[in-house]
Length: 467
Ligand code: MV4
Figure 1 (tube, rainbow, N blue to C red):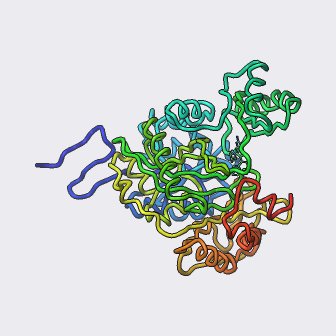
Figure 2 (tube, protein in one colour):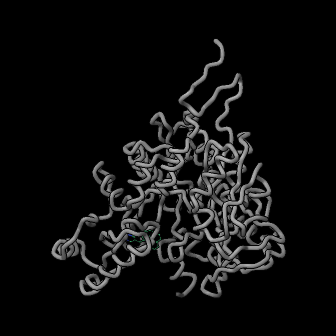
Figure 3 (spheres, rainbow, N blue to C red):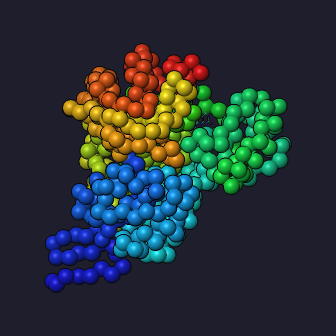
């Protein structure tokens, strides 16, 4: 049987070696760029880092096989600059692009440009991305297949009568959400009819300014919910599995700060039901790659689909740590057309993982972002400790991007062991230079409600910050 050439597939068999891709370009920066480089190295795939002028001394630039400057510091001219990124791919002979999270990771335009340039975009196809990008359309689609969604209106709602008909059934408070928003962006709460009618105009013009799309929809307000999201992975052959949940209830102003897996409140029966629901949704849209299905879980144990994220997420490591599955490597294999190597019955959730986002923000100054030089970086180690970070002693934090310096991911056999280990590791963690949120994390894990697993939406303002 000589060598066969599969001309339509990016998966080329050369004698014994499977070549997934010739070269991957990473269209991102910071810790996630480094995370993707690490995955590529383990798969023996050469990498290209792209960087802005502000990131020329960054670790991804030093660790990638090649690096190409794509523009000035401002994201709009560099990490969001599609022509520049595509040129870098063509110049270096890359055949695939990993977008990471943020920047172009959920841009249908970018996916279309990649396809037309014969570059594999490591992520879902453009139709699925567009569908899930519209939070209102996603909700409608998911509702049609019988998955519970938060009671509310669709985005085509126009006249006042229709809105008031809904509020009469649901009662107040009512949430106003931007269709193009997501992750809490463009969200408002109305306490009464007067408030609601006043806010509609403002919400629409704000949505138009922020997302270029004025569409809004209305939802019943769920009190003290928990944010539970399921990691799913699907391949080209229609196989879909879930890798358990992450509880992301510790957030401040819609910025997640701590994520854990498993959730302290899910029974195995509820996990099974929610996991099967996540798979049902993903199969209905023929999802390919890594994705996240977000649910709100209310205090009665009822859950509702909220939105789907079509990218790898910041908090993916907690899932990696409890399942032993490398999500980024799996994304790359799936994009190369490989069949998923895991089946649901082989996925085991082992122990407990907690992730702490290490942001350069001053918790005593309203979480104000900090820039400047890292004088000393001494991350913790020892059993059950993982640090994903792109910073080093002497690194200068550029003022142009988000404040994430890295993530501390802790594993323990039990939640209690993970918490004790977290305290130990956070105490060991030395970052001299900018203020960070490490003191905030130490406060949270010392809190009796956190220790009992009683965390929900307004936990930070109610139990920690008095804001
Ligand atoms: C909600 C809600 C209550 N009712 N929707 C959406 C995106 C996420 N980041 C926050 N979102 C919420 N949507 C309805 N209809 C409350 C929140 C919410 C939240 C949810 C889970 C965990 C923390 C939260 C913090 C603020 C608001």
